[in-house]
Image 1: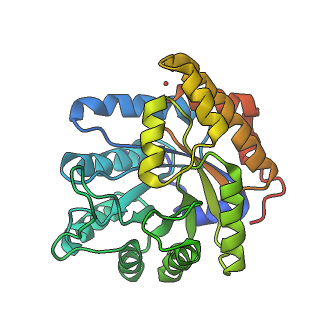
Image 2: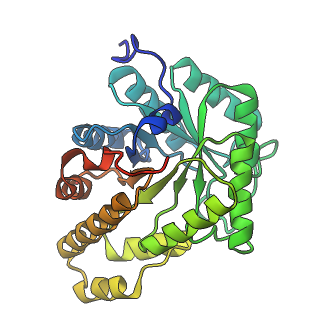
Length: 308
């Protein structure tokens, strides 16, 4: 099937960011083919909010990596959404990664986010595949030198867990942009002060690229504590106390997640954030409620922005 955008000019996310504040959603590939319909249902449900792009994460190997390609190319060919494919250094040689990039290019995909990636489950530390890439900066440089994709990179409001300190973290972030990344998406955070402190450090270091705020609405108490511990994000004590008080009441935890994310995003919008990137976890209910609370298209109203 031809893409609904096949008659339109090619679109790259940095061009969109020049015109407006962006709204975007991130999905992840299932472990088995039977899980694919649920991913597409979530994409379909959130499509009504007219995201500027959607991204699909990349697994640590095997079927999940193949499903990333399948989902992204289906979005490109069969919808009017703008897809961005994740690509990591995990478990693949340079030639294998080149093959992925060539297939994405052949399918008409224009946008990728290049990451080092987390160690596969059961592995304490990241180790590159033989003949693979060791760092996101290497992968970004390779893509820039050999392909025409727009490239995003990750950044960390509280610093990457492996960074020596916050200054070293900013220098590494800056190197990603020097190697060819054009905009940044943050790791999850629950205290906007961390985002604004990072933004201040970045701008003082000469980083002028757009920085999108990555938002993960809380769905499950133990899940979010695990995620936060893995990526070095802080759950503010007051929020953690409210989570603790709700115990195992998952519906109440989800409603708390909607409440806190609504307040968090509203403050970011008032502060002129370049874009809001929701980590959807293949769910749609919470994000739908948050965006409804915020009022229609306000997320994408550029306003005073600086640059289930």
